[in-house]
Image (cartoon, rainbow, N blue to C red; front, top):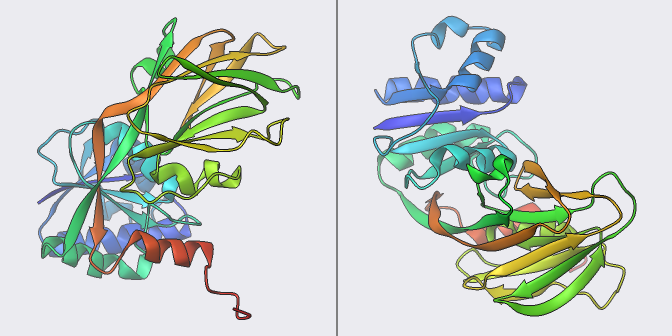
Length: 294
């Protein structure tokens, strides 16, 4: 088995996770590669850096890898997909962050989780992504023009609202007068969209959700659409430009730029251990049922 390991930060929790993971990978004679920037973090900050100096590094991934292990929070997994892209390499996350909807393995479960993967005790779920195209093209998003959670447009350098003209398959929907607009996948429905009043959507639902950010008109509500829909956006406002975000990546677009958002041509594979389910994660992370008055 050939495993890629990716992370973005190195703190006390990360130290324990890294030590436990690499100890068990070595014990099971699994070939491990570390993403270059994360490797440099480990070498600079790990108390026992000599233990990691012999590991190979990677800057890109190919189909020879069997698995990518993300060490961090959900944001780290969102960044990890820029390495996986359309290679079909499955991803699993060790949670050293806060919420952990995507990174579900806790630090004390690392060895058990890796052993379950070795033994084939897991399933793979495929998650839809969003892709974006702009006219005129923007160099900041051309190379990584996809997002796992959401694509959002928002105001820049102003407290004034922006107007987001929205079309679905070429038909006019609405001009949202708001702080911005989110287009979310089912995976992203528990993230930014949820905090703006959007619904939770189960991952196997063939839908996207359009959620306005702090709309001026209270009748502007989130809208669920089929994932075969092409969404066209055009932003106008007092400033000359606005922001567009693809998960945790941000770019600046000129007002009037035509933004086309649709379902990406590939999916991301996530490893689900047999003792996990989306509904179980939902209950735990949102603390459903924790109110003892119920």
